[in-house]
Image 1 (cartoon, helix red, strand yellow):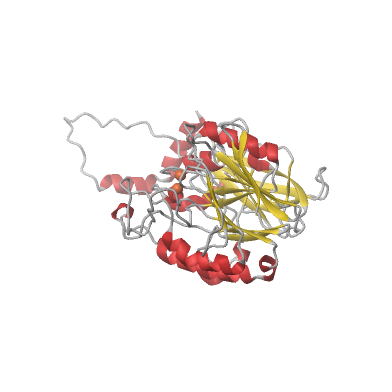
Image 2 (image 1 turned 45 degrees about the vertical axis):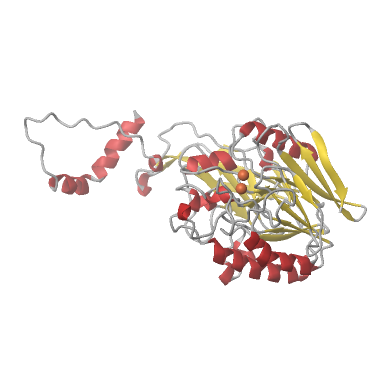
Length: 444
Ligand SMILES: [Fe+2]
Ligand SMILES: [Fe+2]
């Protein structure tokens, strides 16, 4: 009933304009049957109409030493804030609003708040407060519903004094069964941070799909991101689909304060200390050259990779990063060919029969020498959906590990790649989450 009232009021509000539009159309001849109006769905931006608001678990994104992003799914038009404090009782809690200066964003599918001014390597407690707009037919008599308050969750910011343990997932591709297996393993290992190393998606045509992928997956442990901050690294599939260019509405980019003006568009690149580690995120982009006909002229990754080379050189020279004992890079497409298989780089020189690129010669040429010079120890990749480890080789001082994909046998399995410091060395452990076994463990 509310819906009808709202719609009538909305149409009445548009009366003059609607009349003008109708007048310009040809009237149907009297002998023709009256056109049947298809039932229209309620415009969600007019308010929830009193429907119960479903609020998703908070997801920690884009973690920084002094900032933390929180995104969560909503089922209808709502505003949201995050309350946070340095104690579990939430005494003296502060409130952070969505967005930056000026108007606070509201949305019908996902809300995002960034906490700033935090202390490095410090534990915080937080909760989300989400309030629906039951009626937003117009701003003057918009109505709010009852706020939904989440449970209190906790996180710790990264930094030099933080516990140095990370986990990596990659190529999850919205395959929920292997995703649940990986998430369960992550919860068991309890790392300080997770790196989601690309191909989280397949082809994304609607925001709803992205919200499900990143914020509200249909799995048992859907609260996994409420206590473990996630760094996001794009894979080639995370650039596919008619909606995907707007993914920052669901996956928060890095805090703008980390970026310089000319680096404004490097939205997800990160270089962060985690104890004795420096974690560095790079984006290899699409897996074919920009001029490939499949991209319809929409690919602009070649200048992006060059801009990242400049950014990488500068970040690696930053004292905090340069002084890290262990430097680890995360990027989706491998930077080095599998010595045991056919060499198909993504530069169009050689294309495999299925038009699939197995590694990025362009990224290797642009970034590889910089990684060598800076003493990067390990590059963590995905994309091939098959675990492998390449030790350092002549001309390449870093090791490369490639995580498995969502396929479940034969010989294929999803992985959680774990890294931590043990007796002053970086230990790399690769978990096969299908077989629940360790397939690789070495001190690098
Ligand atoms: Fe993939
Ligand atoms: Fe990929």
